[in-house]
Length: 253
Image 1 (cartoon, one colour):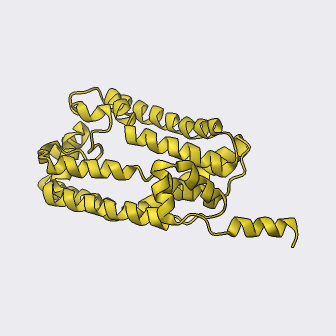
Image 2 (cartoon, helix red, strand yellow):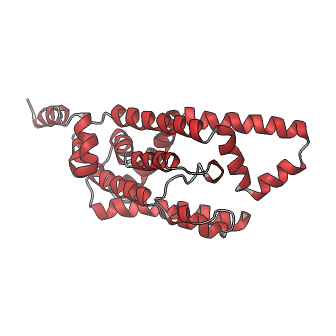
C-alpha cells in the first residue's frame, strides 16, 4: 500500500461521534473542527437539533403570541407597511394579510430547508474566499459541515426567546426579528430609535459573535490556514453585511 492509500485510509477512519462533535462545539470546538478536517463531515445531527428546537420555538410563539399578532407587530414596526395598509381597500388588506400570514408561517415551518439553502450558498462563498483569497485547501463538504456545527449556539438564542415569552412578555411587544435579549437592540425601542442605530445595535449580538468565532476557527482548521485568516474571512464578510443593512436602514428609515 502506497503513501496515498495510507493517507486515504487514515482520513476515512472513524473519528468522533456526532454527539461528541456537538458537545465539543461548546466545550472544545477545535476537536470538532479537526475531526471534520479528517474527513468526518456528517452534519445531520446539528440539523436535527436545530430543526427540533426551531419547531419548539415556533410552537411556543404560535401558542403564546399568535401568528396574526407576530404579523401585526412587524407591520407596526414598519411605517411604510402601515401606510400601505391604510391606503389599501378592505379587500386588498384582507388578501395582503392572508398572504403575509401564510408567508410568516411558511418561514417557520420551512426553516430547516431555508437553512440548508442558505448554508449551501454561504459555504460556496466562504470556500472561494478561504481557498482563493487566503490560500486554503478546504473542501466544500468540510465548509458545509463547519457551518452547521458553528451554528449550534443559535440554540441558546431560541431557548432564551422561549424563556422570555413564558416569563410574561406582552404579545404586542414581541419582535420576531429580535426576540432574545442578546444584543443592545433588544433594550431599545424599535419604533422610536433611529433605524440605522437600531440595526447596528441589533447586529452586535452576543450569540452571533460566538457563532462567527466558531465559524472562523472551523473554516481556518478545515482549510489548513492560520486562525487569523479565518477571522479575516468570516468577520470581513460579516462587516460588509452589517454595513449594507445599516446603510439600507439609514436610507429607508
